[in-house]
Image 1 (cartoon, helix red, strand yellow):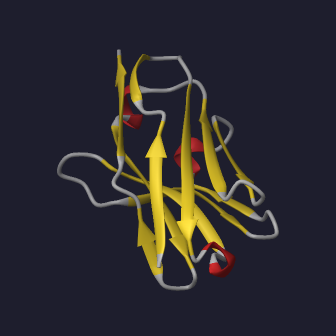
Image 2: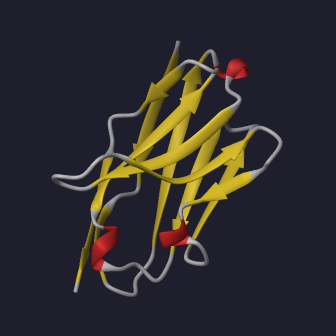
Length: 114
């Protein structure tokens, strides 16, 4: 079992920045992949960014150049630095860990005002 706790969401004006954090506990040695996903009202959950244990990253086209995912294996944490935020980034952001079984955090709300 893996437990994930997200933090760092909030309300920010367009053009601003936020950093999301996700702390993992439990069977952390089995985690191969960690990622951030988001879900806006009425929309499907979508990948924002992902990172493997060896540091390989992937990003949604909509956030490339603005968001950066990083991982601290020693702290069992993954971070999402979000810059140049847009109103369309407004969503609940979820942390995911794969062992390869998928585990999800409870989500943290990000609201970007125009």
